[in-house]
Image 1 (cartoon, rainbow, N blue to C red):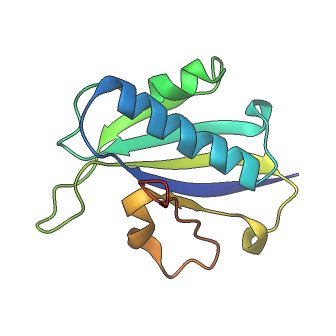
Image 2: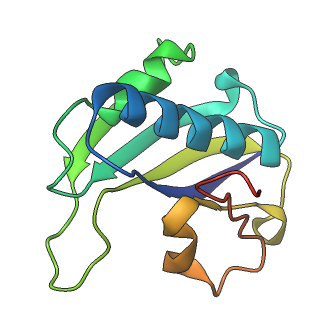
Length: 130
């Protein structure tokens, strides 16, 4: 087993508690699914949120997914002029068999535009196609 760091980000449409919990849960479960991980594989997760998100702690969404004994922390993202609004980011430290190049970082919704340089970015549309 190796220790790897996995990044994730998602953008919210608005700052509501239920929307925060939904989007963060989606991001965490997508990181798990994309990297063949279970809760037991996580060492810790750092969540950051932009200053316009105040409705709920992002870590609470992970707690609801069963991350009861995994160290989690929330922090405020830097306020940089022109940065993307309503974004939650995560940096997870995990034990995995994956090599660094096999790790899939997950950027969802508008946050997919943050890291176009990553080859394994999966964009989720905000609305279902008509």
